[in-house]
Image (cartoon, rainbow, N blue to C red; front, top):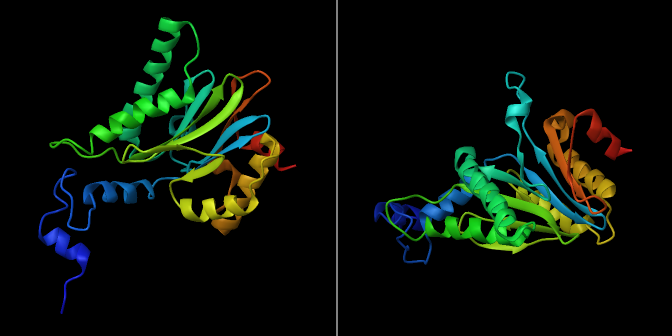
Length: 240
């Protein structure tokens, strides 16, 4: 009886390093890292007519102080990021992104573009899939912000690839969420309508596990260009 391809690759040692291609053209350690990302909690980002937002599921634990379990980070006053995967890996990249934002302000006296942050972080992630002696970063990062009052959303995967999106999801159930977004997203969504749509999708997918207290919302309105946070009761206002 023939051995399955994945078992053959493991037996031949093709999954022992991120720099070794399998005969089928796969980097198995990178693909394992992608599976790790899907074990992380879900985040959804949406570009709207009046701004951009990220809504993240924190999987609330009554024993954890929720402020310490934030899933959405401030990169600069006009840029935010959410992550899925290994949080310690993410912390290193988030701190790097924050430093990049500050260096740009000091050097050029202007806010950095969201794509520039995304590109630099993606370059770091790519290096760890090309050189020996290190494993890939097991994290996907979603970056959202304003570029001269234009809302933008980017996602960088474990390989170091990144793309710009109108709406996207990372983490647990990402494919199910993206399928719903493809059906229901429209270019005329406002932040309020977009948040309600996203919460409705989470409610449909999570069913009995759905609880507003699990979610964290950060949005940037074009009118003032500043990050605003909402949790629990404040998120309910977007459901009306």
